[in-house]
Length: 386
Image (cartoon, rainbow, N blue to C red; front, side):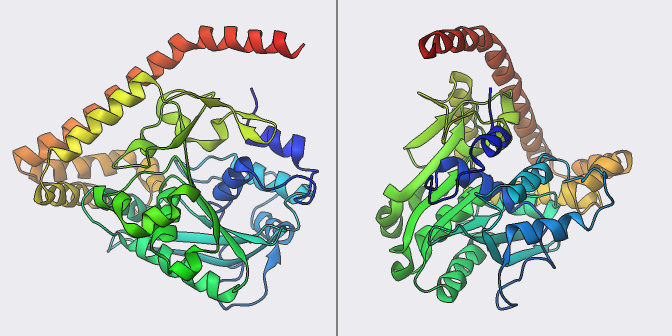
C-alpha cells in the first residue's frame, strides 16, 4: 500500500505545469506547517520569501548529521524525511515560503502556527498547523467544546487578512491537518467577502467540527461548496462536534486513532483511495461522543474544560514530551489534582477517558477483522489491472 512518501517518489518530478495541484499535495503542504521554520522562513513583513529548498537546508543545519529529529509525542517523525524528499523534488523545491507565524501562550491556553506557500501555479496555500506538542495547544482544543470562537480561530482569520493584503491578486487555498483543518474552515468562513471570493478551495484533513450554528451561518453557506473535508475510515478527531455532512473517507494502513496520522492515508496516483463511509465503529463512537458533549449544559462544559485544564497544568509540563520524559512526577501531580475536583467532575473526566479508550479498542478490532476483506479486494483489483 502506498502513502505520501510514495507519492513524492512517484510524482515529485512533475511540476505544477505538468500536473495540477491535487488533494495529496494539499495534505503534504498541511503537514509541512508542523516543521519549526521560526528564524528561517520570514514572518509577516520580515522580508522576501525563500524557496522550500533553502528553508530545508537551513532547518537541517540545526541538527548534527545523522541525528534523529524528535518532532514530539504525537507529530509524525516522518515529517523531516518528507521535507528532504520535497527539497529534492522539482514539484516542491522551488515553492516559496513566507509569513511564518508560531505563537503559544501556556497561561491563556492557546497555540497558533501557520505558513504560506507559493505553489508555483499562481496560487497560495495557507497551511495552518494542527495541535502540536504544546499543552497550550491541547488546552485550546478543549475550548472548542464550549466556546464559539477560540483564540487560534480568531488569529487564523487575521492571518488570512494579512496574507491576502500582502498578495492582493493571488488565488488562495486554505488547508490544515487536525485542528489546522478546523482553523482553515473557520478562517475561510469569516474572512471578508472580498477575500472569500479569491478562495479556490479549503481542505480540512481530519479536522474537528464546530458549534451547531456555524454551519447555518450565511458566510459558511457562501463557501461551503469549496470546502473539502477528508477523514480516515476510523475517524474520531475529524467527526467531533458538528461537521459538514459532505466528506470524503480515505483508507488507511493504521488502526484506530492512529489513522489520524496523514502518513497512513492510502494514495493511488494523484488522489487518495476512498471508501463509501466511515467504519461502523467510527459512526458509533461519533454518536457516543456527541451524546456525551450534548448531554452537558454550556456551564457544565465550561466547568469540565476548566477542570481538565487544571489537571494538565498541575503536571508542571509545558509539552507532551515533558509529560513523557518525567511521567512519574507528572502523573503523581495530576492524580493529586484529580482528587481536588468534586465527585461529579472527576467522574465526568474518567467517563470521557473510558469512552475514548473503548472507542479506540473497538476500532482496532474492527480494522483487524476487515484486513482479510481488504486483502481479497486488493487481489481482485490486481487481477483487474493485469
